[in-house]
Length: 177
Image (cartoon, rainbow, N blue to C red; front, side, top):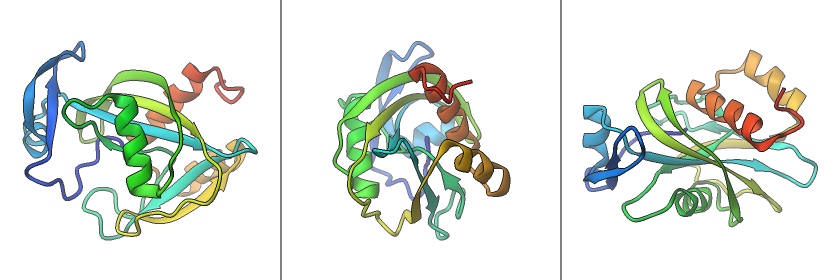
């Protein structure tokens, strides 16, 4: 989930930023979340050769949104790291995927659990994901119509759906309308 703070290590450092995404300083991520300070999150929408979207279900033991579905994968941008670097790192850490990530849109997300800057990327994925099962319980590929039906019948994280809408609009996708 974008902005997810499940089991955030106390020592994980992030850059606190202002409403223009300018760095104000370095803080612990748990403190940024607790105090509502803006920080950066990077996320990626993955597509396969057929244009299907990678969807995953979060682990049931996670603190935030356990068992919810999501079409983006991501996490916090570390100190000194770009959105793009963070997106690639998170993709590998959570799904075992090494892929080139391409920036699509960055926006100030007024999310379900607080506000943060969100860098949304896309990646063309070949091969089979090898998810970290402590975070990702299930993965599957869906066409856009299948994903639209799934959103109506399953629990999806609202922030991820906002990121996906912005991704479709900004990418000029045929599905954007």
